[in-house]
Image 1 (cartoon, rainbow, N blue to C red):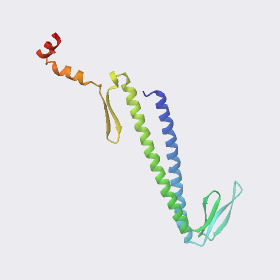
Image 2: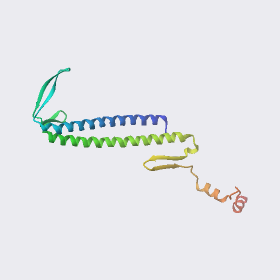
Image 3: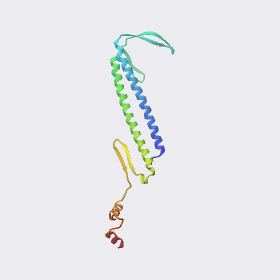
Image 4: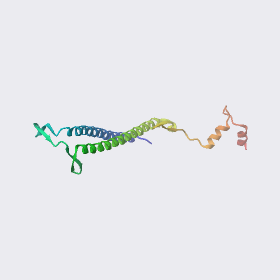
Amino acid sequence: AVSERTKTLLNYQREKVQKAIDEFKKYEKDLVDVREVLQTLPDKTRRAVHVPFGKRAFFKGHLHHTNEIKVLLGAGYYVERSAKQAVAIVNRRLESAKANLEKYKREHEEIDTKKKIADQILAGAGKKGNQGVFDLGGGVMEIREPYESDDEKSDKKTKDSHGKKDEKEVKDEKI
């Protein structure tokens, strides 16, 4: 039986997955922005920039060697790469982020489907035998009907349209 606790758990899982989706969307956007900057950096050998000096001050400066980029490999290890190599690394990270984003979107859809099924089951709990048609998503439907044994089916077949029993059935009952 599906309870309100199950719905609460599904809501919690949905929120958790939605938070992960939002984080991966932001990460993906950041990677695209970094890629755009890396593609334009080697156009000039020297660039004018505002260099931060403390929390509130900036002064004018220049970037030299704009084709040399330090890339974080992980666990505090950096490697020096050209801008072209750094763009290739960003592209691989972007592909990985998109794959993870798709995975979380599918998980989000699965949770929505489970929640929909739980709502349908809870709504149908008052019906006799919890009957009905339930949409499981993806073109899959579940049909619930009361179970009738073979004996019950044969009893129904032997009765005629007026609810009277056949002559054979009447004879069987007399014996």
